[in-house]
Structures are given as structure tokens and as C-alpha cells.
Length: 466
Image 1 (cartoon, rainbow, N blue to C red):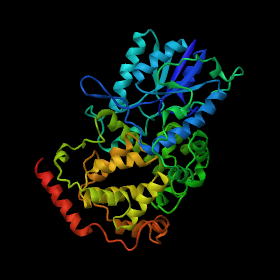
Image 2: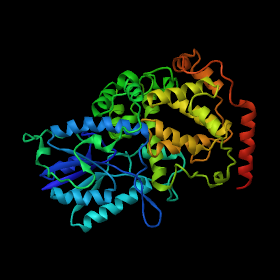
Image 3: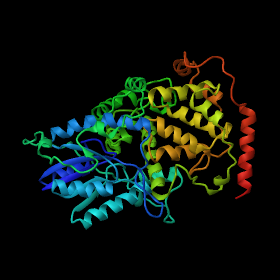
Image 4: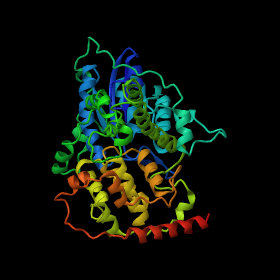
């Protein structure tokens, strides 16, 4: 008996319910990862996950190379494909003689809709099809407000979600004594779009070599690195409550976000390690709050459509943004004239990552001072962040822009100069990323006081339309 394990955003072997179940099927396991693109059905509705951004594609390539080695030690070959999962999975299962297909659940509406169609197709072909938890601590449909709806405010969501028992982590599977290079037993013809070579997926297309080399100096994708960072939790978590807002402190944050995004580590592993760590309770609570913010973002994403383009607060559909290509480019290229913002954008360009405090400040300047549409910033982050998450990225952008659930009031505008004075008082962060990176001095693209007033007037205009 053969089980086909469809991997998506779960590139690990530890605490992996779908993998564990596949190995318990008492047969051969073959793993598959598909580079998917959003597919539209006859009605024009999108089916499938949001296509990966450029920085994420680089990370997935490296992570899949590492995962293939871990799976090989378990006697599991890892295949790759590009195209529509609805055609690829049943065809490959037939060629492999598989009787069962297993995968880890996805929660975004378009991806979920595709998975429903995939499962129906597999069942119609006479195959068993099973989805498993593993990407979240709490399944979105298990939480509801007192009125039976979904949560739109983080604090009550966090209160209820953090009280739930999420169970214990699953160990890594034991290496079977018969584990060999089982890829040799695969059929020669794997079907259209299926390959043994990850390079055939072209995940690195469009990445200049200098960018790959630069980003690789800052990150090591793969489960081993994720576990090493988690094992060092008692080194970076003490003091987290206050130090995680200081962008110059390299070790003040977990740096686990891209590992969590790709599923190289599970949220349950993070929760278990945090609760086990000998650290001050205030630091533990501050870090876990970040983990549950991710859960909240996925809770919203499960219940709402098109968060990357549609504001959660409908009145913001009419917000009078003033699209301006030059203003947008100055922001993207770190040429706004505000040091903290420009340093953040240059850190992003060179490393594929930006400190969270700086993310909020840069997003606020773009949407409220420059009056550029929030979704343009969200798209830029989606393409340039190695941790670009289909839920966290748009929900966080909407939070800053003031149009999302649990949003900060629109009149809360982050002043980049005050933020720099408070969180980078000695200039260590801005100096590091601005040195030799732009001509100095640079004239600010906008007056903070005047642009803040214009933003408030625009907000008042929207408010009166309610």
C-alpha cells in the first residue's frame, strides 16, 4: 500500500500529524510539494493559495532541499510538481498505485475551496483522502463569540484561545530499518508537471545572484535551523517584553517567523518550548501574545474573503487615497527622508526581513502620511519578505491603516521621528542600514504635521459617509 503525502506549508518531520498518520498506514510513503498558482473556476472565483512572493520562493527552495534529506532518512522520496493540484494529485496517485492521500489543512478561503475540490476528486477516483491539523494551535471554527460569530477583536480572542489545551507535540518519526533510497522504485513516468528535481520548479527565477548571496548571509532555511533557534530560547527570550521593540538588537526577537511561515516548526512546538523555558513570566507572556496574534490573523482569514485587497471595514472602500507612483517608489527604495523608515526599507531589501516595530512605522507613513493605498504596501511586503504570511501580512497592514478588525484608531499615526528617538535613540539601527546606502541629507518627501492633518480630514470624510 502506498500513501501520497501532499506537503504545503509544513516542511518538517517533527510534530507533523499528516506525516505521522502516513507512516502508520503500514506501507510506502511518497511526498509531493506542488508549486501552485491561483486557479480560477468557470465563475471567475479563485481556487488555491496566493502565489508565493519572490523572497518566499527563495526560502521554499532552500527549505525543500533540506527537507528532502530528512525525508530520505525515513525512506520517503520527495517529488515536486508545478500546476493544478486537482489534476496532479489523482494522476500521480494512480501512477504510484497509492490508495490514500494525506495533507495538512489550509485555512484561507481560496485555498480551502481548492482543497474541497481536490478531496472530492480523489474520493471520486476511489482514493481515501484525509486532512490533518498542524498549522495552527486552534482550529478557527472551534472559537466563537458569545453571540456565535467570529472574533474581530484580538483581546477576547486571545483570552479564549489561550485557555484551550492544544495537546502535546508529536515526536519525529523513527527511522525505519529498511529505509533506503526508495526513489529508485518510483515509476519512470511520473506524469505531466511532476519531477524529481526541485530546480525544475524555477523557484529562483528572477532572483539576481547578489540578492541570493546577501540574503543567505542572514538566514539558513530548514527545520534544523528552526529547531536550533528554538533550543536557544533561554538566550533570546529573557528581556523580550522590553527589548523586542528595539530594532538594533539582533537577538531581541525570536527570528522564527520565516520558519513558522513555511512550517519548518509548528506553533505547538513554539508553545511547548516557551512554557518549558526558565524565563520571566512577563517575557513568556509577551512572546506568546505574538504567537496568538498569528492565530487571530488566521481566524479572520478563515472567516473573511480577499483580505489582501478588501478592507474589513466596508466604509474604507471609499477612502480617498492619492496613488502616486513616485511617492510609492520613494518608500520602496528607502528614499523618504525619514531615517527609521528608510533604514527599515533597506533592511528589507537586503535581508528579506524587517523588524516588527519598523514594519508598523513604515506602513503608517505610507498609508497615512503619503496617503498611498495600503494594499500596495501589502503587495510589496508580500514580494520582499521571507516570512510573508497569507494571513498575518494583510491583517497587520489593515490594522496599521485603520481599516481592519481590532484596528488602531485611524488618528493614531506613527511619527517616524518620535519612534526613532524612542526605539533607536543612539542611532545604531539607522546607522547600520543607511551607511553608504543613500545620499545624505535627503529632503523628506512629506511634512509630517501637514500630512497627518490631511489624513485626519480624509478619515473624517469617510466617517461621515457611514
